[in-house]
Length: 334
Ligand code: NAD
Ligand code: TDX
Image 1: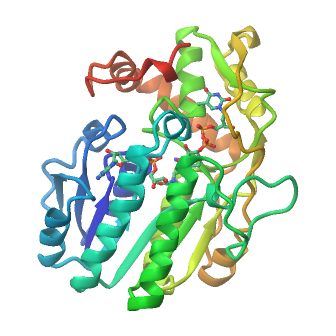
Image 2: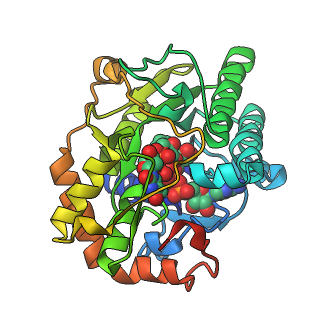
């Protein structure tokens, strides 16, 4: 089996490559990544020498490059490549439109012309928008509130259209908030852990009572494997854990784990259009594909905190700008 992983140098993509190569030693993995500020080949140290892994620096919006890769023969395409940070999308939505929408369209067109058995679009719970009560099932209304969420929703709709119009073997997964190793320290959990380790302020937006559903990244990777192996073309699968936490719950858990004072918490201006709560009904993937999140919040968080303690070099190089040569200070160490 030959699988094209786009965005494999990012947080979830690199965890997926670690996971899938362990599960399927005979699969060949091609990682196509643009290496934006969020892409980091250090996440895949050790794969360089592997004969079943190949890295290609490239852009999913590049039709010629995508076509030539697919013409070579690929069985599965899984698309992680995206601009993924809501705050950045509020500053400038342009790269979100290019990569998340145009990039998905280029991949779909490439698949239309070449023989690919399955395409998985890695999407998000943010497409459903904010909800006060209840949970979003796959047929809930799409009400994205940030430019990021709107770009992901647009990509989902393109996927649906390519399935309906051309019968492309497209499957969409919509997962809740991930956490774990290799997450870029602009997102809440790695930002809080690394700032706390450095004794820096922890910025909490608004009243800190916004709720997210948190899933350990390996559970997400296992769900994606399940969808690749058992999912049906044209279907959408929510991937959730049922573990809902306020942002303050998360911050307090981490500070306690690191034996740091809550005086580090600084309440800052709220994110514009900040969604109050996301919650997924993931019963379809549980019922139809037999997947269920397995890692508890306590276990996942303890592992994650320990990983950032053990891998200071990794995040310090990012925060100092040494690795990417670019780091937007707006999001770190306020
Ligand atoms: P990330 O920002 O850590 O990684 C994105 C990767 O995509 C990077 O390696 C980057 O270099 C690459 N990339 C960006 N533009 C590209 C382009 N034009 N061509 C090729 N590569 C490009 O993101 P992540 O958190 O790992 O998220 C991966 C996917 O999962 C995204 O599609 C995101 O929307 C989705 N998702 C994320 C979460 C979460 O909690 N992080 C939850 C649900 C869904
Ligand atoms: O400094 C911060 N302070 C703060 O209070 C940051 C970075 C975040 N927050 C809040 C905003 C959110 O309510 O924490 C919550 C989580 O924020 P993010 O880590 O930015 O994640 P979120 O906006 O929920 O989006 C994430 O989950 C869905 C991913 O970044 C998306 O890619 C994914 O689709």
